[in-house]
Image (cartoon, rainbow, N blue to C red; front, side, top):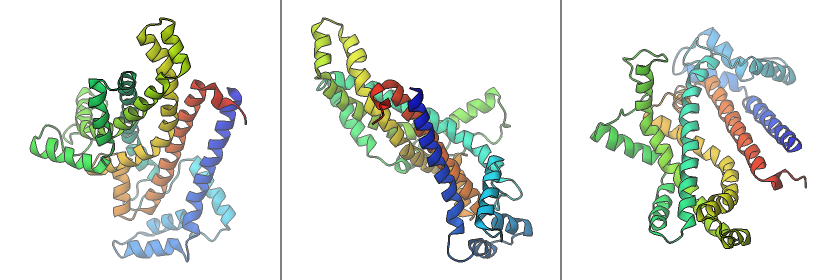
Length: 329
């Protein structure tokens, strides 16, 4: 297992280094002088201070230093979590702005993604254990329909029905602006209330895919010889379902969890924009709208590294569950 983890760490470390390097090179390999082009474009919309212009030149290759020296400075800045100064929130550092938004997304996306996986997998085990039953006939078409819906459409529908028409929940935002920010019961209750609609949107669209995949794998696994042998030995149906069939049927779902993280993150960012939820997705929308390129560059890197980290965790868990994945070919 240790050799497997070392290989995984090395692979994801190289992948993270490639993402970091591309984030450095792409603005600097653009034709012409991207820094001056961005300064001219932004100056047409709002006047820039010399400090803002200097920040753009530093982040996007306006420096006259050789490229390898710029790369060294870039890595040193990243080690200090220094992404420059935001042009739209000047003079706030980009790291402070991203740090204030990322925890909202981590809590919302992390909890809802795990809940969607657990709920969908559990319902898929129950439905797949008795194919053709009334529960299976009800859950399968519903999961197929919900899984085909786009995140933003469900989010807009939730805002229209539960926010505007019924007025059961807030339309958007992260908390009641009349409540001071702090770890108090009032603020936590307000944050939970504002998170219900975006969290429900992600759950509704995400859990159905896990349900459908787990149900099909349970049906396939239930006909395997070792499951039939366990049934013939007189083991209880519950033990056969969970200890034999579900334990092996869940492996493809764990593997699929890693590949689905990117899609879930992308959909959740759209949901944040619709609900004006104060996370990374809404911050990205603001950065694009206001042409805040230092903030956009930092957000792209943070999202890429976050998806890589989540994939690494899912990949490692799969290696723990299935010893065959640790074999060196």
